[in-house]
Image 1: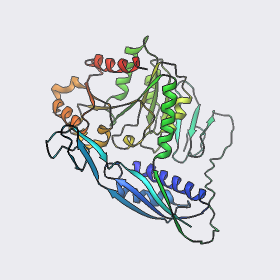
Image 2 (image 1 turned 90 degrees about the vertical axis):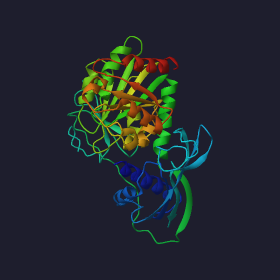
Image 3 (image 1 turned 180 degrees about the horizontal axis):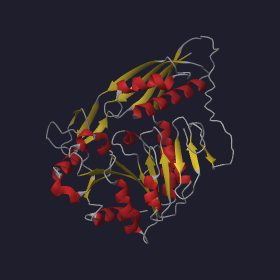
Image 4 (image 1 turned 90 degrees about the horizontal axis):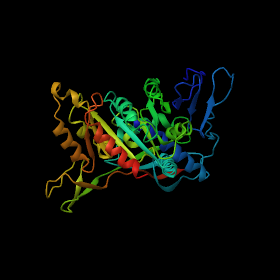
Length: 113
Length: 277
């Protein structure tokens, strides 16, 4: 379950940043998770509780903003929303889609004290 | 828990070298790794000291914009690996698949095909055992096993640690056999130049649709065990079509590592990449 590694990366990155800011505790984290990022938000929440235990991040409120994905067709140039990597162009029906967004997996902000 | 020295690397990976009994290394979270040799009576601590202070005062809460990739640390390390490989003209290839699709057999057949032309070294990733590394070691090429313990994938730090223990030659091939898993390893850049995903005819032809992230991020898709096609309900053309729908840039190569059928095409792909080093 890679969400555990992801959760541990978040805890580490966020704790480092809080330390740089001279703060001992993180009380909130805003994450951006694209629909094509390969991360399941629910699993991530579950793992985050375990990964943050006994760290300065323990108890922090995790808010996850899920971002929709978009692609463009390499054949006809149309732009459209996509649900997965298995996406066809709604205009020409071809499966030659370039992914434009939706792969984000980032910490947007933290609340520290 | 480590069965050689009894210490607990808390989920960290362990490196093992076939033919070097008792020598293993831990890759920890906290600044690198340390060597253990059997019976040296060492003592050490895994300094998981996060230095947090519970006696803090509740000050003013404030929000800090971070805008940082979650996997930044892994990605930076992967870029370091990539630069290191490029400087030494090493072609690093990350092999991914479900367990049992024949990654190790493909490597066992590929290595003798290249021998004399291109030096090869191998990093093997598995949760436990050195079985795969032992198979590669028998071919006489440098190999190191990464045991990820409970981990379901290799990451850039593990590869960095493993590569330090291999004496890589200039203008050579480094095969990194990832943990058998079509989900998690897709997320972790190791610094490789190419990703090769292997699927076999004993699996379902809809694997590319079920695990699109893995197939989307691959450079090559090898269909293995084509010698079994007459005996299994596997539609190779359909599988190729699905793979191309998820990733229309993917190179599709059909082989039977067992009989050698199609392996010339695979070798041609590899040597064309090696010649560009």
